Image 1: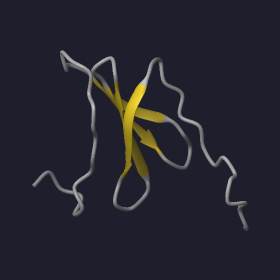
Image 2: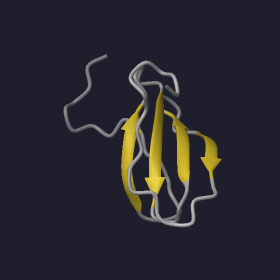
Image 3: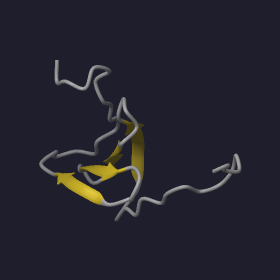
Length: 72
């Protein structure tokens, strides 16, 4: 399947402003950091939110995955 360079492949709906996003090393997940202090984890192919991480008292500015897929 050929995709146009500017084609929208997926939309991730958020409740507020997003500060940053990151793709997992394998490209199967996307994490988004929100100004409301949450981090959302998405399935890249379906656009489904699989987890919402709460508990930060301030906006989350950046999000990243470790290159090896571990927490080290």
